[in-house]
Length: 423
Image (tube, rainbow, N blue to C red; front, top):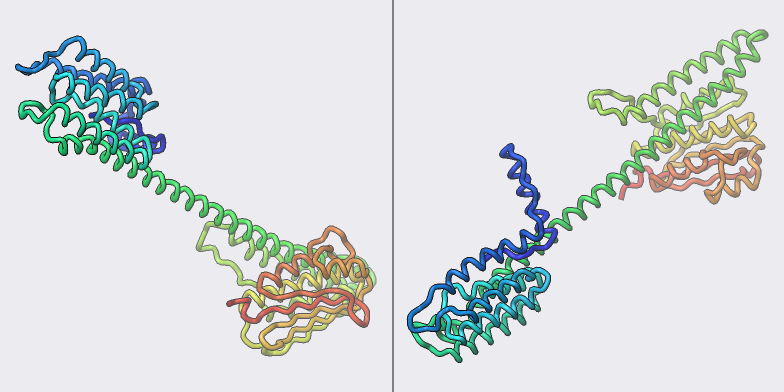
C-alpha cells in the first residue's frame, strides 16, 4: 500500500515538520518531489508487488496469461489518475480484482490496487462518499465470493469475511482524512487567535497614541501660550517697569521648567528602559500652581477649591486638571477676558469643575457648535481644545458642557465620576 494525495494544508505542515527535522541535523532539506513522481512512484511499487504475485502460478488453477496481464495494466493506469479521479480508479481496480477472481486466477496481492484506490477515495473525499463506497465495495466483494465458491484452496473465503476487507482501507483513509481536517481546524483557530491578538494590539497602540497626543497637546498648548503672553508683558515693561518684566520672565522660566517636567513624564512611557523614573501625573493639588501662572498675563484668576473634596480616582484628578488647563489656555488665547474663576466642588458622587471668564470672543455660532461637539476652539476653526476636553470627560464616564455664561463671557463645566467611571 502507498499513501495517496493529501490536502494541500496537510502536505504543507508535513513539509514544515520535515524542514525542521532536517534543520536540526544541520543538513539542507531535500526539495519536494515533483507531482508526477508522487503519482507514478506508488503505481510502480504496486505494479512490482502485484505483478510478482500474478506471475506465481498455483497448480490446479488458471495460469497467468495475456488476460491476467491486461487486467494488471488497466489497474495500474487507473491508479495513475487516482488523485484526480478516485472513484473511477476504485471502480476500475475493483472490476479488475473481481475479473481475476472470476477468471480463476488466484494471488495474495491481486487486491492491492483496489486497496490503494479505496484508501484514496476515503482520504480525498468526505464521509458520505466513503459510506456509499463501503456499501458498494462490500456488496460486490461478497457477491464475487458467493460466485466463486468456498474452495479451501481458493483465497476467496467466506462471503462475510470477503465483505470486510474493503472496509479496512476505507476506514484507514477516513481516519487520516479526519485527522487532517482536525489539524486544518487547529491551524485556522491559531491563525484567527493570532489575528485577534494583532487587532487588539493595534487598537491599544491607537488608544495610546491618542492619549499621548492629548497629553502633549495639553502641555504644549497651555505652557507655550502662557510663556508667549508673559514674554510679551516682559517686553512691554522692560524699559518702564523692570520689576514687572522680571516677574514675567520668572513666570516664563517656571512655565518652561513645568513643561519640561510634564513632557518628560509623558514621553517616558515610550522608553524601553524600565528603570527610568518619571514624574507622577498632575493632580488637583497642583491647580493652585496652574492658576498662579496666569499672574502677569493681564488676566486675574481666582481658584475656589475646598480643602478636602473626598476620595478621587487618579484618572479623575488627571482629567479635571487637564480640562482646567485647556480651559485656561483658551481664555488666554481667545477670550480677551480680564477675569477668570475656577471652581472645584463635590456634588454627590461626581466632581464638578467649572471655568468661567468674562471675555467676549466666544461667538454664539462657535459656542453652539462646541455644545454639539462639532466646533473648534472659540475664535479658531482648527483647534482641538473643546474636542479634547470632551474626550477627557467621556473617557472617565463624565460629561462636559460649554457655552456663553448667563452674565456674559464663556463657561466650561465638567461633571466627572469620582471613582473614575469604575463599574
